[in-house]
Amino acid sequence: MGIASLMGTTIEYYDFFIYGTAAALVFGTVFFPNSDPVTGTLLSLATFGVAFVARPLGGVVFGHFGDRVGRKVTLVTTLVMMGAATVAIGLIPSYVTIGIAAPILLVVLRFIQGIALGGEYGGAVLMTVEHSPKGKRGFYSSWVQTGAQCGLIVANIVFLVVGAAMGDDAFLSWGWRVPFWISSLLVILGLIIRLRLEESPEFEALRKSHVVSPAPALVVLRRHKMAVLLIAGAAVGNSATFYSATVFGLSYGSNHGFTRIQMLVIIIAAAVWVIAASIFFGALSDRVGRKQIFITGNLAIAVTAYGWMRAFDTENQAVVLVAYLVMLTGYSMTWGTIGVFFAEAFDGAVRYTGLSIGFTLGVILGGAVTPLVLRKLVADMDSGLPVVLWIAASTVTSALCALSVRQIDAPSRRSGADHVARNASLH
Image (cartoon, rainbow, N blue to C red):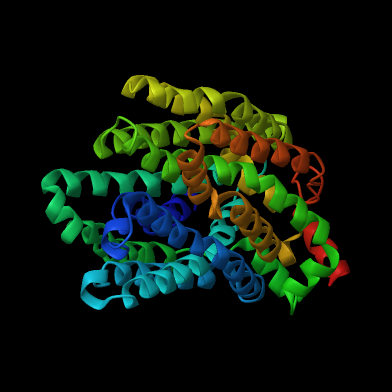
């Protein structure tokens, strides 16, 4: 189950991240050609943030169906939606061809991507958490978390290969579209995998016991408002760190002494490290607890962000890579535990909705504007200090919010039968 969820999540995040890579590298030229290079990049990064605004909507809509109809059917739907939007982005004519309609179509399709991913994350985590053997939730859910890095790696490798196989002119003209078209093949693979999945046993138990909530979102807003707000705050630092390191880091490094290929290689290598480290910390959380690791990871990011930013000044690829690995070790502590940590803050009948709304709100606060704001601040102030302060403030905030998150559904505190009994009492 963990591997199946990992593969499906990898495909969805591949679709999501090739947009971020393209926004950092080519969209400014293709869709905003009348702007100067800095403004064009800022405008393309602004379209990148549109998906984050859409993610809570996806969390509410698909959270409702995930808690009402089931996790499996929701995951199939989000995969198809994401794939269709991604392929369509690769078919949009350039600004030179259709004018203002080009960036408008880009924004609409990016919004659809955001809705799909907003519904995808909670379902993928829960399918694994609710299938996990006793005492192994952290380990198994960490594999799903690494789907984000796997998707990032595949996206960057595809861009790396396509970019290396052709000149800059061909890449800007049509080559950037190839990674988006490849999504159609990956979606077919993902559908084959997800259609074979069995429904979550915990959801089936809830359905058989007739305690499925008719309006999960209303229950969450009425009974779990504080949990949602705390989770949103706890997710801010993780999201801010990730998009600072990937989207902003790719754009910044490519304009400060490094080639596009050098930066892609750094990010790919760092993502491989995050995969291994996230699985390690996810497994460790089964023994020492989610909260301790999650908080420690956020504080570690705050401490190491300065060294990461200063590393770019060396214009040495090896130094920058080491700085990435150091800072992203702290990130791995948060990412490897975030899914199960947040899932255990809700009971089964509203878990999909609560997890999705809280997490996606945090992603908006931490990730929607981070690449755009940081790029603007660095351009205006000619200093990397705002980047360090942004990351540190975000991660310290997350650590403070995480302190108050209650894990009401931790396996050590309640048996499976008790889960259903508690849900019955709430609904």
